[in-house]
Image: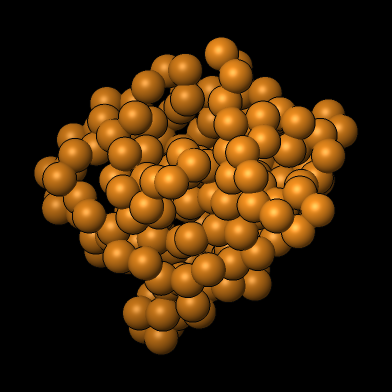
Amino acid sequence: MTIMIPAWENGTLKPVEKLDAHLRGLKHKAVSVFVLNRGRVLIQQRAMGKYHTPGLWANTCCTHPEWDEDPADCAVRRLNEELGIIRLYPTHRDQIEYRADVGGGLIEHEVVEVYVTDSPDDLTLAPNPDEVMATRWVDFYDLCADVARNPTHYTPWLKIYLQQHASAIFPDLVRAR
């Protein structure tokens, strides 16, 4: 199945096949979500079948929106598709552009709408094994420290979010320190 994503080619936004966008390093739209609970962040380990960064730990979920999909709707959709999370409605926190080598000759050059939501203590997860091989809740500061100690365990975008944009994404956690 060919997946088309919104990407800029020669200055014009148009549908581009996802793998082609990553092979060519085209700037494209993306959505990332962080689910929080009492100072902890829900992270996921990407399934081994993913075509880039398999087995690495990432934020709660991320994806590329469909062509005319509202980013907030995309965030809600992807929480359900990847983790079986329903009835959480993330709040837009920031827009971040980054470019990162994700291995295998692939480049992520994303304009990401970042969303954050708090979860109840009894949040139910039902990870999709095609997307996610494991999940865990980790204290925000422990996560930042582990990313610094063990960077090869984490996706490039999670490292960028935590090292360069933490105060915009997690203002309450950064202030609480």
